[in-house]
Amino acid sequence: MSLVEPSISTPAYDLASPGKRLAGYLVDMVFVFFLLFLKSVLMHLSVRYSSAFSLSLFQGVEYFLTLLALAYFLFCDALPNGQSLGKRLLKMSVVGFPYGPSCTVLQSALRNVPKGLFSILDGVFVLFGFRRRLGDMLARTIVINSK
Image (cartoon, rainbow, N blue to C red; front, top):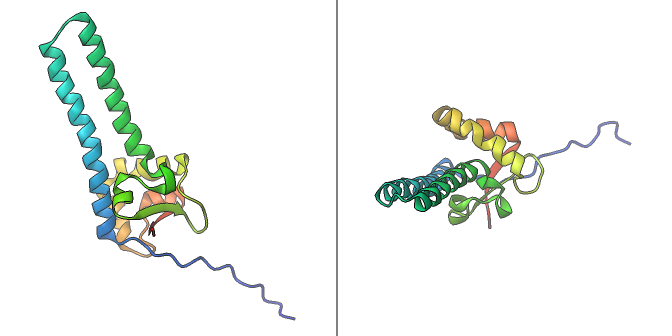
């Protein structure tokens, strides 16, 4: 009988490469900036067609697009299978680390707030170890290649 307890080992992950992660991030940011671009087009149109009804309609849509862009930025990794648009296109997903299902809404917010605050510094951490950035460490997640 052995007195040594079996060690709990972390599963082997097929980690997404830093380049692939950057490409996925760029796809997601193009989507966010597209939403904000639509907002600016609507602002221009609202000035051109300035009746009371159209002004309030345009303003409501502008607020909606701003909130949608912010919500996507913060919660995109909580979409089904832990895949934002960029991750889905590049076949990656966010999962809990060391064990866990796909990224939750809370984990997605925790992952993405540091990205907004410390953008480049946060991304540098992807180059080391388990390729986890500050947001991944805070949310206890990891980005893997999906099948």
